[in-house]
Image (cartoon, rainbow, N blue to C red; front, side):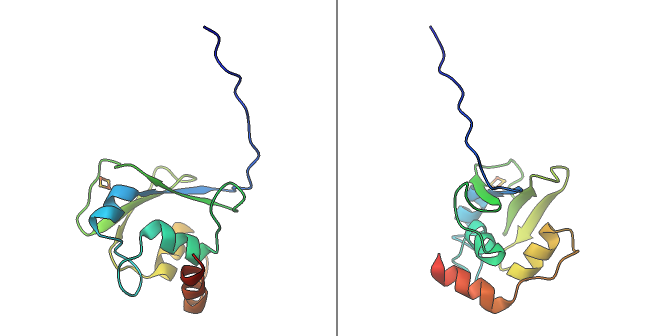
Length: 120
Ligand code: FES
C-alpha cells in the first residue's frame, strides 16, 4: 500500500501556546468577568489573535496533560516546554500574558481584552 504525499502548509505562527481543554471544561470556563470564558479564548483576546494558521501565534486547546490541578488550567508555551504553568481560575488576563512572556512585557490594556472578547 502506498502512503499519501506529505503536504506542507505555510503558517504565520511565530509561536504557540498549549492550553488544557479538559481543565477549562472542568471549570466551566473559569476566566473573565463572569468566569465563564475558557483560558484559550481569553488568551486569544488578550494577545489580539485570530484563529487558525494566519494568526501570529497559535493558542491550541489540547487534551488532558496529566497534571489535573484543582481550580487551575495547565498552559504550556511551546517555546519553553520545560516550564509548565498552572493558571488559577479567575486569573487576570494581563498577568497571564506577562507570565507567558517571561515577565518582560507590559500587559495589554483591559479595554483591549474586553474588545477582543466581544469580537470573539
Ligand atoms: S485535566 Fe488538565 S491536565 Fe488533566
